[in-house]
Image (tube, rainbow, N blue to C red; front, top):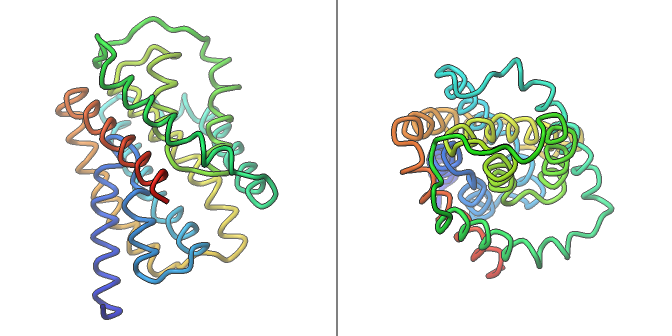
Length: 248
């Protein structure tokens, strides 16, 4: 495949990833294999993916905030904890073993898929909160952020599960809050990759623009259809990611 054609395919893949990721997470399922198939070095693929992913999660966060589904100012301290957790995770990735995560993650993702597929009563309506907002922010958020920086796949699914089961959020509100915290954790990982020079800036920025547009379309679809769209797509994304991890 010619260089220009490869570039165009990667940009198109980023648009599709932005659409899917803004609704159910898992955009890296599309972009990371696409980057690797396009001949990008694995470390640069991870760094470039973090850069372009910022545009998608940032775009989705702004779209959800503009319709009142998330308060960016009120959630900023929590987002900072997600950022710090991810930055520590990315630094830890150089020294901490991830073999246990690689083994357990597919089965955790299958469990999440089954939960969202089979749990009765899941909708856009709020449910009972099982943990205080302060405790949620100080424990769950940095822990998932750390995981995102250390390993990454499925972080959005873990945020979704935490918001629905522990914070009592409806599915749409959980999606909106997940995207902001995912943006923050992406930024934490991105900062570490940027300092190490493992980013293809021209490609990452072009894919980022496509991610931004795809995420806008995806967020609009999620807000229009709510749980009817988010639940099945989340199940599909979790299962697809689990299958990919088991395969590799």
